[in-house]
Image (cartoon, rainbow, N blue to C red; front, top):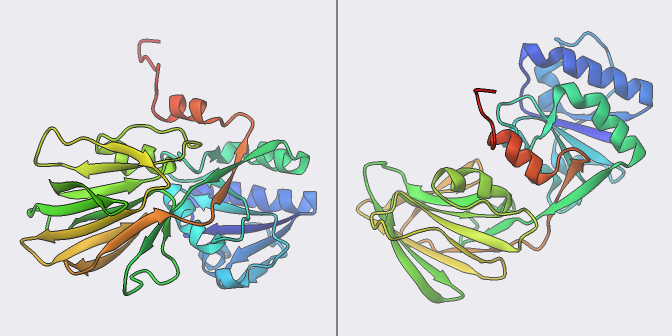
Length: 292
């Protein structure tokens, strides 16, 4: 089995878990690869000296990789999709962050996770992506988002107007601080915090959620993921911010944003005890009562 380690940085308190992971790889005869920037962050802090193969960029990913381990929080996993792209390599998220909604495997579950991979006791969740198209290729070839595409004002004091079209038919002109277009995966992220609905990951939908709309009767709407969304933005200022997950670019009012479902999906590894409903209950503390 060949596994790539991907991450941005790792705190000192998580180094023992990384040591344990690398030792387990050696015991299981798992061949580890690691991205150079991530390796440079912790190579002088680990106690073991594993035999690793270094990868500099995503274009160097070998064709025989079985899994990518995203080590960090949900933001790290979101960044990892730009490495995986359309390769189909499954991603397992090991949570060293905070909430860990996507990176659902706790550091204490490393042995359990590796056993599950070896025994093939897991499920692959294929998640839809959003694709952004602009005339000037704003994000180059990294134009997909797993959670959401967001348009908002660069000046938080200025409300903007976003004209939204579905399949070239006007949906609404939103007067708001911004607009979120989310996938079912992203429905439990930024969209949820702005009043959007929770959507099961296997639904074939997108959610349009306004950020602090001026009209209180404007509410989030669930649409088919087969729809094509076009956005035109205007406001008192001529610069606005477009974000694909954690990556942002500045645009002007003459830029049209065309948003549709990407032509490939991202595969996430789901272990047997990590179903979506149990994750909801655990992460959102449903049913929790401090009196008990």
